[in-house]
Structures are given as structure tokens and as C-alpha cells.
Figure (tube, rainbow, N blue to C red):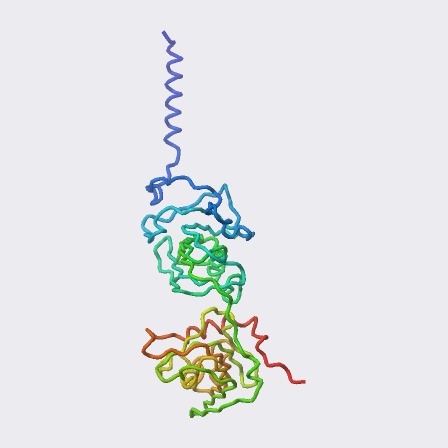
Length: 362
């Protein structure tokens, strides 16, 4: 029979152990805690055995074997195949998580190429993100557009290695996307990407044509003038039609103010009288044809309606236009917002505008 002292010591030890267990903090249940544990995934991507791993030559796409892979909240519902398990997951060195659900096939997206894709972004806290791009072109490796948005820069790094038909999901944690001192309503971003096509970046063509005398001159009234330096072919644009183009905007003295050389998607101008574009640009495109090089001289009042960066309302602006396509009114849907397009072009084209300055005359 055990001594009374030993029994007392044993009871005391059990009591202390029980108190220690009760003192352990218990994490509150979260949405993710209620999710069934999925099968474990390899840390490295698992491509089809018939070809190399997508993007394996890009130094940024490095695996972090010890870093856990978060899962989206259950309430964020994804369409197939994003509602299932990815083929592979990995972390990039910049803190972006990449999940491949379909590798696609064909040419690989590398820096310098344009990836055409539809992109949808959602926040972990269900706040609106405004991230919805349908068949948008992304010039990978370029800083012209991404330097104004760290989110877009991080997203484009996660597009490297995609192929046409590929489907990929990115997680951009909020602490990677914004500085610690910043205030944002949007939490971690979950971005789904549907890759469509890979192309070269379309540049302004025929800039040298504007060094030659104009072949035709048009006067549209109120000081709006047009000069055709190269003729086009196909249907001539009429009121109500849509014109796709590349452009360079200069001051009357020749200083480059804006261009859309850095934007994969062409500018679309609907030839209608509304507040969604520059009045002089809409009027001055009547008669334009695909392949035409037209120079527009737009006086104050028919140009920009508000001062935007280098472009002022009280100045005469000169538009050098590379006309790419003309679409009849009955063949188009919706209305193009070329004012928003111009705003993005002006803010994004600054560092490389020197290439569009006129060549000094000896």
C-alpha cells in the first residue's frame, strides 16, 4: 500500500499537468480550418512528361519547400478547373504563389512577349477589386504599364511560363502588394488567368512617312486639319464606325506628349459625338482607311477637355496616326472609352517618349 505522502504528490502532479493543458491557447476556428485536408502536393511543379517544365528557366520562379501553401476561403467560389486541385504549386521569390491548373500548349510566355489573357481578381475579404480584364494584352517584362501598380507588376511576374490554353491562379498576399504603412480595403488577392495567345508587341508603323510631304489635306472646320502622308485601303471610316489605331501625340513645337507604343491593345475610337473621347480625334478620323498614316492638327477646344500631365487644354496638339483597322457601325458592340485609354497612355508612356521626338534637322 502506497504511503499517504506519495499519493498526495501524485495527485498534485496530475493537477499541475491538467492546469498546464488548460493554459494552452486554442486558435479560433477559421473558414480554412473547416475545409477537408486535400491530398498533399509536391513542392515543385509536375508538368506532363512530354515536355519541359513551364518557365523553369526563369530565375524568379523558385520553389520554397518550407513555406506553406494557403488556400482560398471556402466562400470564394471558383469556376472549373479552379474549383479543384492544382497540378502544381510554387512560390516565386517576390512572394507570389503560383498554382497551375492547366499547362496549355505551344509557345511559352517569356519577357518581351505579349500574353493575351482574361484575368479576374478577387479579395479574400470579398471587397471589390475592379480587376476584370477580358482578352487583355500584357507586355511581359515591361515596366511602362506596371510601374504605376505594384499589383500589376507582381501579376505579370506570375504570368511568365504560361502557354496558350493555360489556366493559372495567383495569390498576391496583401503584405507583398502594399507597403506596411498603406491603407487598403482589399486583402489578399486571388487572381485567375486564362491564357489565350502569345504575340510580339505591335509597334507604331510608318513613322518615317510623316517626314514626307502630305498627299492629301482635309479641313474639318474650327481649325481642325488632317494631312494624309500615306494612303490606305479598304472601307473609309464614316460617322458611327470604329477605327483602331496606333498614335503619337506631339505639341505644336514637336515635343512628344504621349504614345501607345507600350500598350498591346490598339486604341479604339468610335466616330460618334459623345464625351468618351477627344472631339477633334473623332471628327478627324472620318475618311481614314487601314494602312493610312494621317496627321491631325487639333486646336484648343477640340482636344483634351482637362489638363492631364503634359497635355494641356489650351495647347494645339498634333496626332500622328497609324490606322490599323476600320469597322462598320453595324459590326461593333458597345462603346469604346478612348478617354480612359488616352489617360493610361499618357501616364504610362513618359520614360520612352524620346524615341518619338522629331529628328533634329542638321
